[in-house]
Length: 206
Length: 119
Image (cartoon, rainbow over the protein chains, first blue to last red):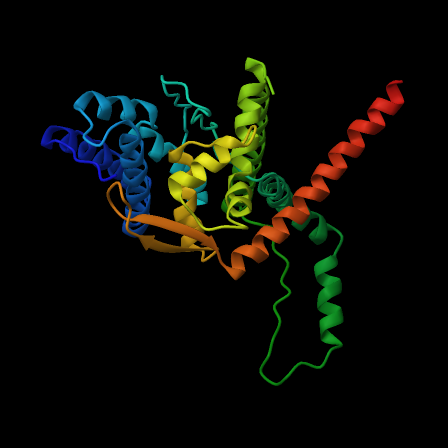
């Protein structure tokens, strides 16, 4: 039974289908995907109208549109289905007509890591090494390690023209400060980042 | 099957996770068009889907070549899009069913162990 729609009813149906297409556009569906969904939906609505009457009234169209999902639901459902869009927050949407299954969509929010734990640990370790570097250098000079290395090098035959400089000088103040400052900043980032990550996890668990 | 309000969200989540499996399984034996598929699933207890869930999934399955689409004129209006399982879709369905059975079996086993332990 072919359905004969009035211009007004056809315009109302088209407006709904356009709204569905807009919702699908918003969540990044391709033209082909949109066309498929809208064609399926149009065929369904016309089947539902045909079951009511061969020449459905505007009231029939409104009744059928009240039974199908609202246009916004397509945007939300597409969110759930498209893995690349999973991060979007999707609040449940329920139809008032209360058909078999509501289109509730989970709040499937991708968990964003503030900073990976391994990065935080690496920051603290590297920072500690940097802070310790001047002290270690002083210790090596004190223990005549540089002189020992020089004597070892003198016993090794080096290629012509190659010279090694083993002059032991204590580290200059600006270099000490540079090591200390960089190391402290790295440790600070590591500790603060750890606290933030912990606080977020704790808050999420509440 | 009656479910409490607290379980509704869980049931909805479970069903959403199974949409692909439901669609592929429904198309296993016969070619169906969108609305027909919707009605077929609605006839089964606990499997009803809405069109905003089903049609985008059908589009995605078609894009992945797991289902093939054929258009046929409809007596009520625009052509209907008939969906059928492809060979790749059949293979995917078999894999999903195997996994589903394994998971279901494990859950059943856990539940029965617990029952045995509590009695």
